[in-house]
Amino acid sequence: MLRRIRVLEVVRPAAGGMKRHVQGLVQGLDKDRFEVLLAAPKDVEPRQWAGMEGVECIPLEISGRTPAPGDVVACLKLKNLIKAVRPDICHFHGFKAAAIGRVAVAAMNGPKVVYTAHNSVLSRLNAHLPQAMSSITDPTQFQLSKFQGKMCLYVERTLARFTNRVITVSKDIYEQYSAIPHLGPEKVSYIPNGIDLKRFSPTAHFGDRERERAKRAIGCAVDIPVVGLVSRLIPHKGVKTFLLAVASLWQVGLAPQVLIAGDGPSRLELEAFSLGLGFGDQVRFLGFIDDMESFYEALDVFVLSSFSEGMPLALIEAMAAGVPVVATRTGGVEEVVSASAGGSEGVIISDRGRLVPPGDPEAMATCIQKALLFPQESRMLSDKGKAYVRENFSIEQMVRKTEEVYEEVLVCRD
Image (cartoon, rainbow, N blue to C red; front, side):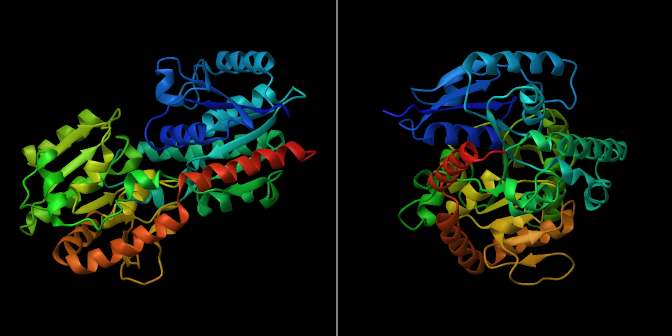
């Protein structure tokens, strides 16, 4: 019997999309062909990451900050771990884990290095990002963000020679990383995020009765529209833009119930911001919730408000559930929602949803209003979105393509 390929998956502290991506990958890898080890923060219950038997979980502390005082210690610990477990492949998830990981393996004649870029740190160099955010956040953050972007680009260029393959979750990130010297298209693979379609795609047509039942279960009135957002509560997710858009809807006499799922360091600030806009209980912060299927079922419109994204799982899940979407034109979002039809002033009504510029609450409010007031058009868009997601974003496709990358890098000389 052939020896299984030993893969060490390494992740920094993570929540939301990256965490679910890693969970799905670890669960889905063929255990007859791959021996999987997972190095993750020790303050996370191992089974929350692995989710199944047959995966060895190893505590490893990597700070989510860039940079952080403990990075040198983390690098040394990771280097010792790699020497101890002797993986064939080290698969690093996210910029921080990949930076520390590639430094750790640079002097070794050992494992192949695979790195998944879940979101592009290089997008911080984009001019539109600070311009869009300047109206609702501290302008000094932009200077820091641009400096971080330049620093991250330098790190990526320096460590590219120690990278066998970069996996990007969107075509936008693929283009950015393919342009980095010592990488190029031959060392970059595009593998979009995948979801459990059986979980988020109801087999029967989702109707008004099911939505009413879901609304009652989550504590909403059935006769008032529900607009929802799923997000890590951090500045670049643009939740303030979303709240300002809701305030604009109130000014024209449309007051939907608003549900915000997710948590993060900006939660208290956002709750205070919401109260300052006079929303009261009309806007509810739910924190992280497990039953996302019921959450999506309760929504009349799903909104994604981010300034920067890779390939957002929440957007894919909402579309799989058949919910009409309004999303910002950033990263892999356009790739999912599509931009096949034009619109004015940066707004696009595509064949699968509505797209708005990042940081534009008025455009977002207009699209939410149209999504609610024209339900037949919204249903048509959501049906097409659901069909597209079912064809292109399954967890099985993502895992299979990742396994192919593992096998390819093992036979490459570089």
